[in-house]
Image (cartoon, rainbow, N blue to C red; front, side, top):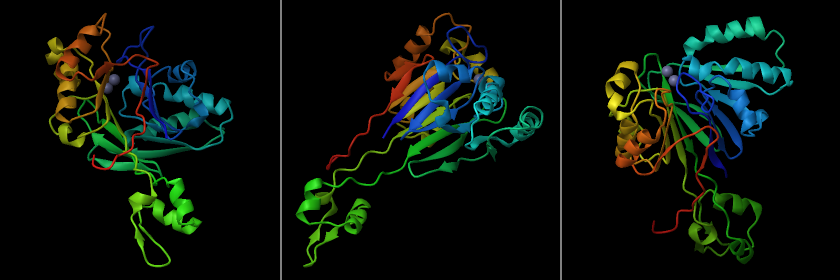
Length: 312
Ligand SMILES: [Zn+2]
Ligand SMILES: [Zn+2]
């Protein structure tokens, strides 16, 4: 039931001693998804005690070094560790020649297969689905093609009320049907409503990862009601012009977006190394959207499962 984000890197293009370039891990029901893979990602995975072997899907937002240079070291380490499971890599189609070059020159005898899933950053679409979640790409705006990733948890099967199983002497087949939301019809024809037989369902949870990008109004609808939103805030509001010029956002713009999209919580990161302290950036964002956190390497953010009580 986990839905937990770990920040591995929160700096922008240049790493510092306290902030590595962009990488995050999202744990959804004990499946681990790596988002971007800046230089040193494998070091951060170890530092923050993430079991590397649990990662089988890597999503790359765009082909700038601070989001991808850690990938080759990570893949090499997996090889040295004798990994057997396939590694799925999702990235813009332009990444294929680079990946091929790596495979040809450095990965002759790789112990595992790399499965490349190319995309174009043209339209919003689903690129991954399993029994717990879907992942969509969201086209963003930067100096090169870039996408955000929107993780949406799927509705879970309903949990039975223990007393209902005993009361109606329900068998496996009946329980399976009831868990999908069906009512139960007793042998003498009485209809027992599903709500009497099951616990209230869980709310589905969502996470959006958006970096690097300008802020633009269409995102208000694309990101509507997202529970947790990571949005880059490379610059302070006073450097708005520079943000526009370089295809980035300010902390204030990120907060405006979170407010307009009715996000549950905002995380800002990808901070420019020009700022000695990011406190002013956080202050600017909180003035617009109070539920904002400025992320640091190693931070974890969880969304606890919550049942939808009747009437809400
Ligand atoms: Zn970047
Ligand atoms: Zn970039």
